[in-house]
Length: 150
Image (cartoon, rainbow, N blue to C red; front, side, top):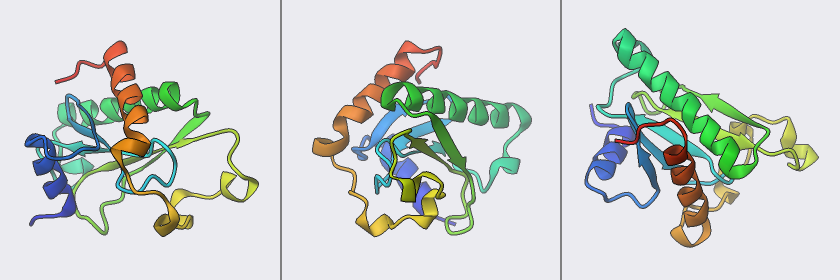
């Protein structure tokens, strides 16, 4: 089965995805297509697997560690007070993790909502002009930290 996650990973492998942040040990960090929160990103496993439990124990630990490390980089790069993490795989049945930086100055109507309650169609689409700086800051934070980039 080919999913949007498979297609994204293929684009990352061929350097055809402008939103790539970095190649990590377990896969790819990319900024989300819709920036519902500035810095919203995904961790895509490479190779793609159906779900977290399909990974062997060591690969699972690596994926989860990469996810947390990417969260550390998001906090440092955006000034977020926390990161919301999500893994579903219902619409796209392939493992991927969503990471949403949450800022302390979010509007009151947004602050307590989970990301899927927001209007994604109103969120800006990723563009290098608008989001390249945050992509570069995330990459720099990952290089600066203990994350061995592939």
